[in-house]
Image (cartoon, rainbow, N blue to C red):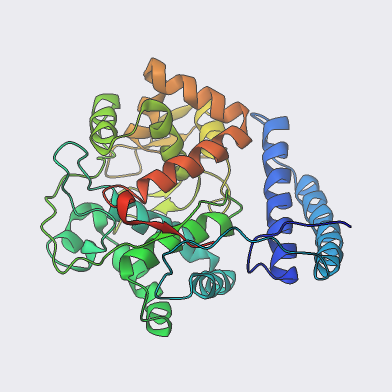
Length: 342
């Protein structure tokens, strides 16, 4: 008798889709590592998509076969969420399939909501959706995040029982995975704040150097390895003049989550971009990419540089470390209240 162990609640089609996404992400990471410092070709992209298509067919058949298998579920905990986590997750996945461009902003929303924590003072109202209120929502570092909050409102209305704090955290996790990144474990149980007293200036300042970076991330409770892994999320999205004042993407695939931030940082010559009002860097070859002063600072700190080199060489290591660090970020200040759902 063959016994197959599946994730509880994972349908055959969902299994096939998740397997295909994982396969495509692995193909992209392998191509990035093999062509370390080189431009990816259209042929390589076509090959990856062809392989992914074949894998969908294989995974789909395998998933269909699994429907007759024995499914072993982990014992249920004594705590049950007041909302259907799987249903909310599916709704987020479907919404991002229609509008993947929203994914980077959802990651930024989750990041900025959590990044106000002070591990020594035990304050900052992290992971409580306190950004819904002034003055926090008006802080300069949070400019533009009103769009991400508005994007999530239809899902909140469809699932009113989920706290905003859980919704923002889960959305960040789903967004990472939707862009080909690692699966970040989500735990439920956050409580929504009723006001915000978060002081301004808690989030990283992109104009600063390595000392500022270490001060901020140490205050959050992260070591240098975790710090560099989290900054690696700059592979996705781009800066906008009407939000941060900076302009441009960090990588050529701003909706693809991989180790490209590190490979681009190492493989390009970065020069001052005199076209921009704020001090930022652009790649000398194409002048289409950008790096912030705080990004370039990673190259000149011995401890940070070690992890930049490692993650540029090993995309799987980066994904694994990022998933751990991002889960830790989304649980700052509330980890004792959270529960697994599957």
